[in-house]
Amino acid sequence: MRVCVCATPEQATARVVARIARTVRENPRAVLGLATGGTMEPVYRGLIEAHRAGLGFAGVTSFNLDEYVGLDPAHPQSYHSYMRRHFFDHVDIPADRRFLPCGDCDPAEAAAIFEARLEQHGPVDLQLLGLGHNGHIGFNEPGSSLGSLTREKTLTRRTRDANARFFRPGEVPPQSAITMGIATIMRARSIVLLALGAAKAEAVAEVVEGPVTAFCPGSALQYHRDVSVILDEGAAKDL
Ligand code: GLP
Image 1 (tube, rainbow, N blue to C red):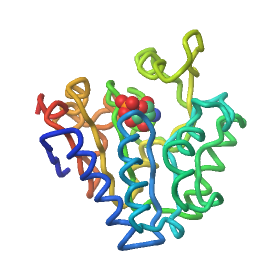
Image 2 (cartoon, rainbow, N blue to C red; image 1 turned 90 degrees about the vertical axis):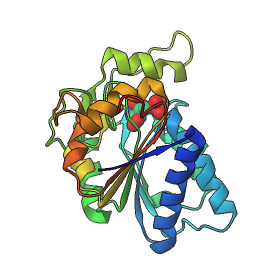
Image 3 (spheres, helix red, strand yellow; image 1 turned 45 degrees about the vertical axis):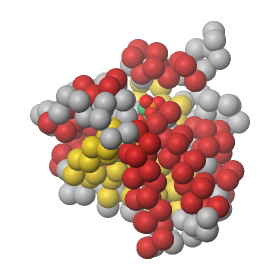
């Protein structure tokens, strides 16, 4: 694991943007693994800027980590909508090469189809990851098998509370999601995890320096051969 501590969140974000841009420049047919969440919004803004400055995504294939079960792609809080709003509507990745799990399909079927697409177009060259406060990656909540593939996962109270801020007041956030499994994520050739702010510090310390355990799903990354963990000073404060 390479750990890089940047002075500010902006610098950490810029580093991740530069890494993704370099991957696409070096291999215009790269397969990117994409993530959602508040942390990623400025990453996509940076990539859109790079696109406007000439970086082409027309040869890229993308796979997103996860999607809420029960939300159709048009729902404003679905990850399909998030990706259109923050990235896809502003760059030129062809629509038929942008893969997300289907949130309003039968979950087992959606998971199987998603794994088949990964089999067909993968492996992912560069997987982007955020980090949940409880150490989750994708929606692999604590207790997820380290050997898991894409499947439906029940969300913990803490995750639903953390993500409730994106939903309208009174709207109940989904109880479960379809997520790439931990073993699915580990098949990526390279992984970049971005975590920002002191609220993530405890989870970061568990991921980087704790034991490898299903109780902190991100700790599985210690077994991957090419992982970069990009942090600001807040997120690194417990290391
Ligand atoms: C969700 C996503 C994760 C993401 C996490 C952190 O739970 N499924 O992939 O890492 O949010 O989000 P934020 O960046 O908003 O803290």
